[in-house]
Image (cartoon, rainbow, N blue to C red; front, top):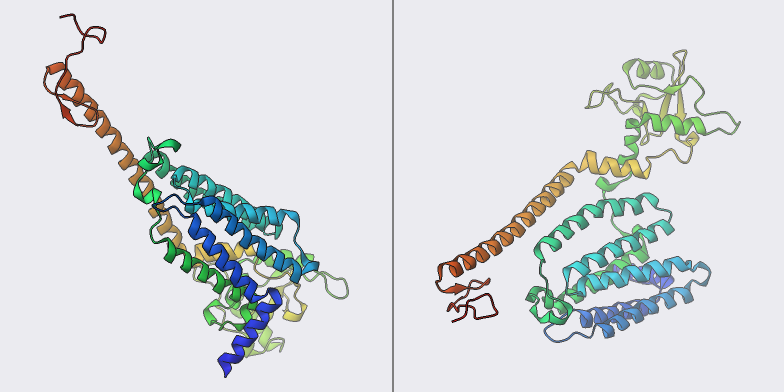
Length: 387
């Protein structure tokens, strides 16, 4: 009974954003378009697939416009969204790696434009900066391994893994079923998802003690109800030492159970500051040695860990191994591409040298492909001598 009621609530939430039938129809139509556009053993009607994909995208745009006529995005959203989706389609359907990589670059730039529309400048620039390394590695692979690639007129000379998609039906079904499921989750919001204690935002707020300068700047800009600065000149964020703890408890300003046993120093050896977002207080030290407590209700609304610092803590402090492993993998990929490309060049030079040596010795000729054949002395007009 509970699962049925949850399903009905989720359906109502999806209905409030977009009609579920329209949403799933658009996903199915887009999946058919991608399946048709993927390269196969026969000539793939890419134009038909692009038309079907465009129809699915237009169906979603029209449905959202009818459901939310007062919340229509600007023209730039439609432009960037169309470019991003179109380039994504060409990345997985183009038969030449060079052009697929170029479409990938254009897709990243269009996605960054969407983030700029959402006022997420940091995420937009981080997307370009982070993917720049991967794009450069991709170009190294393409330029060094796809040398002497066939021209447009000789597409049949491409390798099988470039000319044909492997299991296009299964890949398309998996991708668009995942898209439909993610869309439902986005529509119903995060309220229906089970909470995880390890993913709570309290851990991020606790890192405010590691950025005291940021906290002091925020408090210095903010003012209370009387127009006074929350942090007066000469005041600073107090250090959570034993003296401060004992003085606050003795004066009855702070109850003992509200002091969560903050150590005088953090694991890095730097002083720990007297701020506890979980308990809802911070301690300010005056120039005269006095202490005062600022309750959570008095904090300014922007006293939180900034997004940039949160990303930095997550990458460097919590997950440094992922960055190091990714760097090693990309470095090994680049070295492998260099070795493979160099081996190909050395093999070509060796074949040419062997063919020239056979011609000078008068033995059986060897062409540049290594195929032996009878040596024919050039005639008159071709560098030979008259009989």
